[in-house]
Length: 336
Ligand SMILES: NC(=O)c1ccc[n+]([C@@H]2O[C@H](COP(=O)([O-])OP(=O)(O)OC[C@H]3O[C@@H](n4cnc5c(N)ncnc54)[C@H](O)[C@@H]3O)[C@@H](O)[C@H]2O)c1
Image (cartoon, rainbow, N blue to C red):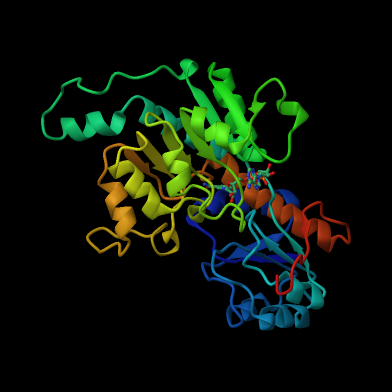
């Protein structure tokens, strides 16, 4: 029986892993270790490996060791692979695969939750009620079908967001260098200037690139409507958090919801109850009743977790069978 070792496994992944192993006749073992040059040794005696971590896996020693154990592939059950030294993996004969789309609906439904929370001023009423104030001042809301939703980056997730808000009757505009014909009856493509000036909700769904780093900054926030809400469920660095805090304090926008934020690596997935966050901007945002922060849970649904496990393990089996995975990734730049 073929054996696969999965690294950094969370308890919620076990049911899907057990089901896949049973269905496919594999032995799949798990650990909670990150992949490092030291822990690579745990893979000795296995036919395949699957990893999942934010920390870098760039030490060529990892891939040299895996090659010496006869490994043929290196599969991450995440979309992002910028933390993997793909070049070193390829030099050691390992095919690298990722999971390019596990459930665009997962993130888009969180966007919907954040948007409705903001539009109906839920944070403001809840904060008031906490001290016995049940008044109505300032919480008259717009209805979503009267609003314009502006999507920056209408790819897999942005398209799913567009379809949800179009179905709710909103006017949906999008900015993306790629115009997708399948969105023709859903979005109107506009330039960024128009999007910032006209959207009641600006929601970011681009990858993090040199161009999108701090795409939401002092100037773009100033160019938004004072009544507008900002959503970021993409990558933390897409928004300049300090500029967002200032814009909210100066009432340049009406509110914000973020699932990703600068400095989240030290915070997300940890219970920091009673401990300092050591992140001033995050603490300021958490104290604002018109801001909602979620701990990078956009992807975290039952469907998405199952897909991440199944797609990754299917790819290992495909490669071990000598076939070509549809999810191969290659080194694009030196060192990656
Ligand atoms: N919150 C979460 O849990 C979670 C989960 C999965 C993905 N993400 C993040 O969501 C984002 C979108 O993921 P996706 O799978 O939809 O990616 P995708 O590649 O399918 O789509 C991204 C789109 O952004 C466009 N784009 C790139 N640069 C742009 C720019 N400067 N201006 C406007 N558009 C630009 C691209 O053309 C593409 O259409 C990524 O940042 C990803 O890391 C977050």
